[in-house]
Amino acid sequence: MNYTSFFSEQSKASFQNEPPGEWMPNIPNDCIRLSSGYPDPQLVPVQEIDQAVHDLLTKEQDLPLHYLGTPKMDQLKSQITKHLNKRHISLQESELLVTAGACQAIDLISRVFMDRDTVVAIEKPTYMEALEIFKNYTSHFVEIPIDDQGMDTEQFEKMLMERKKNAQPLPKMVYTIPTFHNPTGTTMPVERRHQLMQLASEYDFLIIEDHAYGDLYFDELPPPLKSLDKEGRVLHVGSLSKIVAPGLRIGWIATTETLIQKLYWFKKDLDHPFLQAVMSTYLESYSIAEQSESLRLVYKEKAETMTRALELYMPEEVTWFYPDGGYFVWIQIDGVDTTKLLTTATENGVSYIPGEFFFLNREEGKSYLRLSYSYESKEQIEKGIKLLADVIKNNNKA
Ligand SMILES: Cc1ncc(COP(=O)(O)O)c(C=O)c1O
Image (cartoon, rainbow, N blue to C red):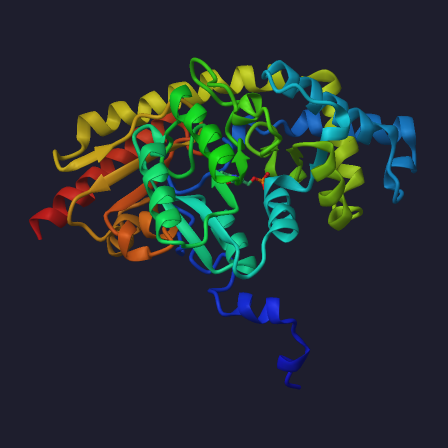
């Protein structure tokens, strides 16, 4: 059967891209996984979630298992709204949409706002799964460089001025991870945040603020873009994947009520009432703030273990950014193809994600790699960095 004529034009355009997740390098199980952007397995609250499932079903019987779910779903909205209020995002429950993870949020936003010719501005580098989603909807991107302070808003302004002067289409949306960026671990300072909001107003674009790591700050949390948004231009995307458990698939979009209604149009029953009820029951005993409080200390220590080991073992030509929160350290090794180097690294027992996968034009990411300190223990992190440093030194000698 030839299905080609059945597919929509939109789908056919998407199928021109690489299949989703295909980029993921094959990583042997026995490696020290500095590649995994997953929570520390020790910190996933297995018993507590088991208890929440038990309490929920004992109390509510079949109710959470029906289409419409239970009042716990509204309770979850209220728990998230209150949490965002504490983060200086003033929000009503009608301005929040709970989604099946941040990824569904990004997909819904793309679906509602993007045509094949829509120009989307992304950071260079950016979160590869978001890029994969955007490429399903549009083929037009503007890339904004990143330095050790996140998005370079000065450069972005110049790019916008240039495009306007040359009558090129301007971006309708900007996707940014301003706080504890994936993959670079960088954070935009407040001045750049204000400048971005100013540009949004001047050049009339909307902003997707991906705040997936926002609660994992080591010392302080900079103001979310949403908290600076006076015109209703920010769609703030959040997630409980990094602080509770990614498999529960709980995320959200916080934006104006008008936009929430439009986004809901396409979502309706596409998420999981039962899992939302379980999460809400869990959060009755452990608030999001309490939950992240304890994690922050652990991840801060792990980040320090990693950066100390980098200082101790890496040869001079290796450079990196120091993270202020989140999961990642971004490394550059001048003149080295990190995709090729991964084979030797995994043979020697350590893995990472080669930088190229975070770039639209992969050639530009060849000398970078992303390390994650979230998944492995401190001992394994130190051991992994030492192994990687030896691999880099031997590669330089060859
Ligand atoms: C920047 C960023 N946004 C979103 C996500 C996905 O979050 P979720 O599991 O809620 O879909 C991730 C996960 O790695 C991420 O790094």
